[in-house]
Image 1: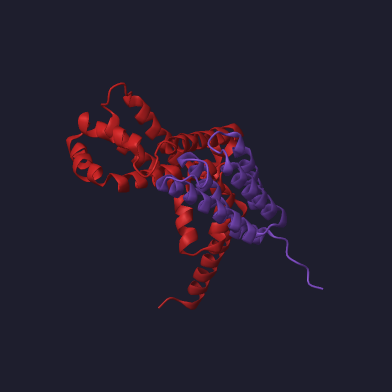
Image 2: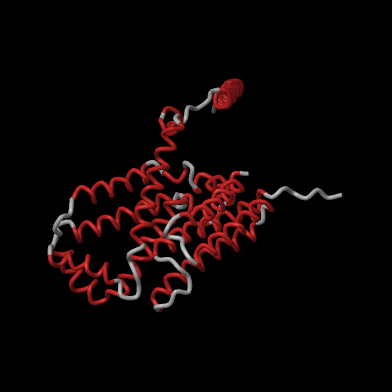
Length: 200
Length: 109
């Protein structure tokens, strides 16, 4: 049994401790981890990050222009490089046995993905998700044409790295729609806004 | 307020896109018309008009590529035009609910 007086002292000490913790949490500002980062403090850094995002968007916008349905002839010609000048044997097998026999569907998928990449990166909506799609698409293109004549491997590596940078900096939050809409998504709640918060 | 500004940017962007060769012929009419509609949506802070303009861009993007596939020129343009309009359309549709919330509350008398 704990003596009554001792138990009282114990309770008041605990209460004082809680009050101290509460005061400290109110009066001591917690420094956010990003406080010293260039993106938090430098406007020019934010503009540069937005510029990289818009430039990547323009890259895809321009390249959606030559994927012409219904035959996608130019795209078909480029895809053959993956078989004629194989980069990885399993990928070449995939192109020969899966992509080429179903080329119309593949062409539509490519057009949809690249046109959406351009549009979404341009306005900065769900940017991190589309940056991941951009990395995947760049990898697919690289695996297909890397060994084709007159190709420069680093162009695809740099293209992929641009999307990595867009993902890492969450580039849509700076001068993009993600930055405008994230507060309202956070406020509204629900599955779709939660998904968009993760995608941005 | 930020969402109103963003809709203004997209509206002006749509009008400015007519300077690019990707937006030509009848596509200029679409870009100008929907750009003005987006501007009106921003002016009136109307989420419905914003969503309508966004849906219009997305529909126009589909019409362009469907026309290419069918061998008709229902709307001038190509995948690049469609790509720009997907961005504008998705952006306006995403902004529409926030635009409605930004509308000034009517004072009851």
